[in-house]
Amino acid sequence: MDNWREVNELNRREFLRSAGLATAGMALGGSGLLVPRRAAAAGGVREIELVARETRWELAPGKVIKAMAYNGQVPGPTIRLREGERVRITLKNELAEPTTIHWHGVDVPNPMDGVPGITQAPVPPGGKFVYEFEARPAGTRWYHTHFAEHKQMDIGLVAPLIIEPADADPFPYDREYKNNMMGGGMGRMMEGMMGGPGMGGMMGGGMMGMGGQTPAYDTMTINGKAYPATELLHVRKGERVRLRLINASADHTHLIRLAGHRLKVTHTDGNPLVQPVEVDAVPIAPSERYDVLFVADNPGAWFLYCAEPGHPGAGEQVAVVYEGHEGRTPEAPIEGITDLSLWRYGVGRGRDVLHPPSGRERTFDLTLSGGMMGSDVWTINGRRYPNTDPLRLRKGDRVRVRFNNMSMEAHPMHLHGQSFKVLAVNGRRLSQPIVKDSVDVEAHMGSVDIEFTAHNPGDWFFHCHKPMHMEGGMIALAKIA
Ligand SMILES: [Cu+2]
Image (cartoon, rainbow, N blue to C red):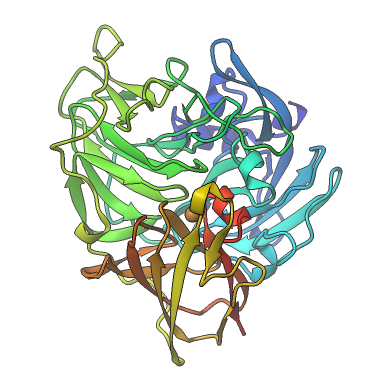
């Protein structure tokens, strides 16, 4: 933990205040958190160092996994930047295998995008790579490995990246938490990660045999911990509390709810809505983020949890305790949601924060298929990457894409390098498109129409964020010249 010692004390205090309780590393006696940063030096560039290495990580008492971590913590340290700030992040790879970092939802220059074989060579064991970019757009972003994701993400190489708006935040709040969730689900081996919701955090995965096999999970985490090891969230009556929910899970959609309270959704993948939308619970697909507010108006102790059956029992819950409340164990969460109101894309009205188009209109139909009879082949228009047809675009083009999902599983489709508007879902137009960088296309003939301005030149991955599907071929390139 030597590198933590270099942490600038002022930054450290700032971090502790802003990140609050929810970030994972705090469980290690408060040591974990910090991004060792040298104070902003030359030319106003913020310098950050991230060291990726294996570590033992305790998900819950008695459940220790061999994890991969940035700076020794799961999830990795929260990076908090101001919109437009320039940052230089040095990744040192002390793992026994290659890795890279992708800055999810950030409009980085193409060579900084972290996709091995496309934008950079993988960083070998013992090697390093310097990422440098301006922090935009504002919002709840995150960073994660883009190498062997099904293993490396699941066992810890994920972290929040918060870009504070240069102007005032449209929705004021008194306290903030980040929650990441991870969750597992699939494989055969064992432990899991995080799954959750919450406050600004991330989710992680579980793990075991580092051999490249599909991990299976029996544990789900919020900010790197499974209940009862999840850290309490403290609130005071009357406060407006902001939760930044990040789903870092490889396979699972989580359904986040705070017992005794309603949640107001304010941002979709970090991008503000016109007005908050109040719901009982928020479904969040892999790689999606939602910022939500709640008003602390119901004193007591409550669970913030995932209402998917089995998830709370696997650890995906955290107690929210009001100041002055005696007794810290909330009532058991209710699993399954029948008569509650849920967030859906169509209930939000987005703000158009994208670059205006200046070029041609282009339209693409992408049919998502695969997984038949349990196969691990996943296709776009019948082809597997690298044989999929690229979207050949010019800077400024207005690009419309319709996804049609002919498979039996949902696909959270993520575009690198620029965000998009969601125009329509299952044939129904949104009254005012919401802005995202990942959109979940429902199984069994689900469809989604998106539109983006091809403003960022380069070769950009456009893919399903479930690592099994991506590795099975569900990737196209958006080539912007
Ligand atoms: Cu998929």
